Image 1 (cartoon, protein in one colour):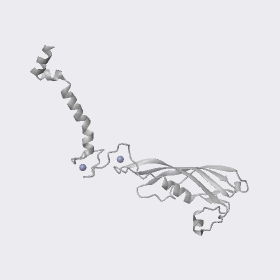
Image 2 (tube, protein in one colour):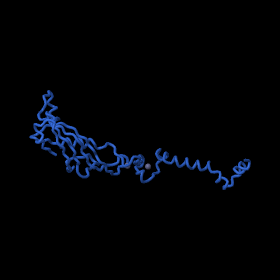
Image 3 (cartoon, protein in one colour):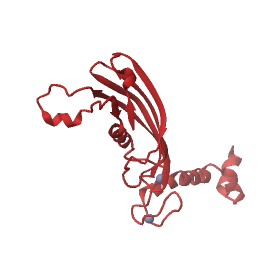
Image 4 (cartoon, protein in one colour):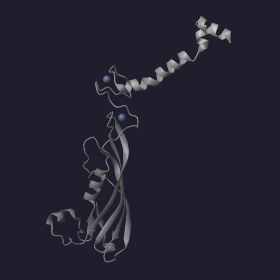
Length: 193
Ligand SMILES: [Zn+2]
Ligand SMILES: [Zn+2]
């Protein structure tokens, strides 16, 4: 995406805003990540005297995979951008730095690299389909949100713990049931009261 900054030339401190939707097919996503729909571009360009400062954000819907269960999920990426495009190269000793400094080219600035870099940086390293996604069994690979497997894992023990607690409290806190079962000890105890 190239922007013409001609209207700002020679007007230090002035700025304009851009709100646009552009196709996301210029971004090479890593494997397992896919852009859905356009990039929502919302930027402000300001003449700083030495160049043009670009600030704002980019938003894009993507599909990627849950890092635990590998199921596909959709999320909105938001990338914040801030970059200054200079009118001319500064007086720096190190010529290697020159390649990294974006320049104004004939009243135009090229936002492509800036957009690609910011969007790729905003891709989460570890996305999850839901906060408590149990993921896959490390032993047999079963999807634990859909099925329980026979492998004994500590996670399953934790999930069953409340159930065994409940069973325990039912056994100890229901004298009526014991009476129904004909517990003579219970009857004796009550008659003494
Ligand atoms: Zn998941
Ligand atoms: Zn398993």
